[in-house]
Every structure is written in C-alpha cells, then in structure tokens.
Amino acid sequence: MDAALLLGVVTTGVLVTDPGGRIIMANPALLTAFGAPAGTDLTGLDVSALATLDPFRQAAALWAEDSERSHRWPLPGDRLLQGAWHVVGDLRAATITDLSADARIRRRLREHNRALAELVATKTELVSALLHELRTPLAAARSMAEFLPEDLGDALTTDAVRGISRNLDRLTAVTDEIVLISGIENGTIELTRQHVDVADLLGEVRAAHPGTRVTVTAGGGSVLADPVRLPGALIRLTAAVQAITGAGTPVELDATRLGDQWRISLPLPPDSAADQLFTSTGRRGNATALMLARAIVGRHDGTVGIEENALTVRLPAADPSPPLSPSEPTPGSAGPAG
Image 1 (cartoon, one colour):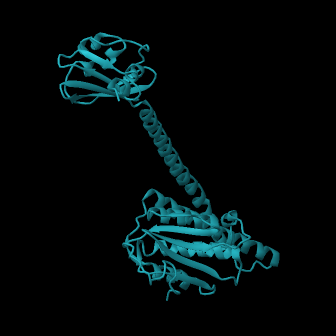
Image 2: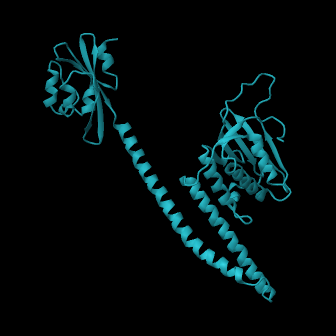
Image 3: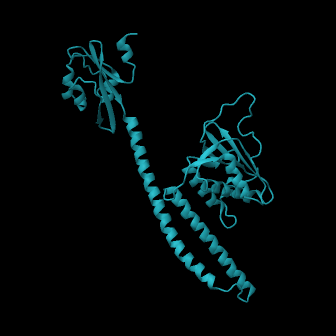
C-alpha cells in the first residue's frame, strides 16, 4: 500500500521531513489536530518555519528541536496535543496525538474526587456534630431515669417510665454504634489483621446464636481478618436475616471459595423484600447492622450486598486457591463445619 495513502487514513497526525529538514508530507490528521484548513500544503517548507506559522506555532518547541523528547501543549477549546520526533531511516517523522478526551476525563475524575472528598468531610463533620448533640441530652435523660424508683405506684405510669428507659437505652446503643461505624470508616479505629480460618469464623457465628439453628457450610482456607470485628459483623448480619425469617426458621450460612475470593451467603426468605433488611428490629436495628458490616468488610477489602436473594459478603482469600483434581468436590461442597 502506498505510504501517503496509508498516512491519509490514520487518526494520528504525521509530518515527515527529509534529511535537510524540509517537509515532504503532512497527513490530514495533523491539519485536523491543529485546526488548520483542510488542504493546507506544507510540502517544501523548512520544519523550523512552523514555529512562526499559525496555527502550528502553538507547538513551537517541537519544531525547534530534533530530539525524540515528547512535548505537550494546550490549544484553545480545552484541547491538549502531544508530539514527538522519530527517526525513520534517513527521514524524520513527527507524530501528533490528540489527548483532549483523556485530559477531559482525568480532569473530571479529579473534580469528582475533590467533590467526593468534600462530601466525606462534610459527612464526618455532620456525624460528629449530631453525635455530640445526641449524646449529651441522652446521657442526662438516662441519669434522670435512673433516679426514678422502679415502682411508681401507678401501673400505667410505671410501664410508661420503663418504656422510656428502654428506648433511651436503645438510642444510646444506636448512637454508640454510629460512633463505631464512623471510627471504622475514617480509620480512627484500627483493625488488626491475622489469618482466620473460614470454618472457625462461621463457627463463631453459630455459637453466638445458640437459640437459632444456623447451618454452616465451608471449605478449607482462611482470610486475613480482625478476629473480633469481622465475626461481630457476621453475627449482626445473621441476626438481621433471622429477624425477617422469623423465630424457629433455620438460617443457612454458607462459605464458598471462588478463585481468590470467599463468598459468604445468608439466603433470604423467597417472599422477602431486600428493604426489609433496613427495618428496625429489637434493641439494635438491621440498618445499623448493615452499615457496620459494610464498614468492617470494606476495611477488609471486601463487599456486602444482595446477590440472588441472599445477603452476601465477599472477602479476599488469604491463601492461594488449591488446584482441584477430577476426584475432588467443587468449592463449597464440604460438609458442615465443626
């Protein structure tokens, strides 16, 4: 294929000079990159003349030297070009690449990152301010409630005061949990990392729910985890699922090795809506359970979400996945963990 014809269809701007520095060819993409009129003929010009010729003088540094150093320069209209020289036999060729789209994407990412950082800072300040405003009156109200006698003589009044005390305790517990979530998210509460066997991890969850039949299945392997915080998060998630499945209904807790990840699943009832997980149940609501789990699992480089009608936690595996022989079962098919 003819070289001129080939250069005429490429999207990178190309300018070729002879050994004496005179231009022997400039393709249409080069003219387009600089915004020069179509059909502009640069043939025969000394390349150094471009340093004084509109619109090419915007890349004066490129035309004024013969090194292969890369140059970048901005153009009107929020555009960015990059150019460099290359030796091709006795000839020299300058390639011009339009980086405008990439530059715009990077700038938007920087803007989004700044906006996100501002939102995170605002959230942190808001949470701190709200917690301060909540904890002070809560502490005062609880102190006053403690001075009241257990029996006020009137059954209705006694029940009302007891209800107030229970709700004050509940608000205090939720407030303390928000403090914990905020500390884990912003890193002020440190998490330790050590190898934790997955079967042992799920065994802790089952042991924490003695009144609930929790079926545990897990293969062999471990995760790098905080030995206190991560089991605590899974215990809370199991309680959240149990709250919507109903008392006496067994909860299944399954851990399956998928390549370099562990997937821990808590199947939800077939007729349950995912938003039921965010309703308040008992002394501590499911919503804060999910928030806490997301904070803790996120610090373990994992995720919490709903997958195929199951509350699912994904965590990086701490050990390489063992190769399976034809006679071995697939991951997750092992029997109940002890």
